[in-house]
Image (cartoon, rainbow, N blue to C red):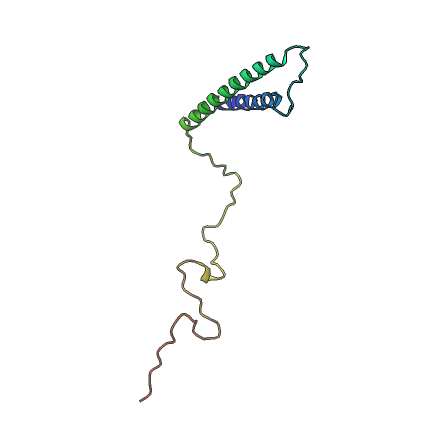
Length: 127
């Protein structure tokens, strides 16, 4: 039902755009020419296009409200496709740089020096 109404909404929107573009603006636009001979007079075409715009606009608004209501009522749990998930081992390898992990102890330098953010160990004084 939702998909059908969404397609109708798209068709109404496209029709609304077409009807609006056919209307005559002050500059002439894409509208019907000023010739009085033909299917409709300029006045009759303007009345028809104005009514068509109002009707299509109303249908568009009503469909928008109905689609929003349907989307709000039919809340389903999201379906997650697990067909592409790789099998991972239970234990992950430790990170190469533990300084980047939050709450990890700072790494000790390999040359035996103390890191800059830790105080040097206390050395007993000879007496």
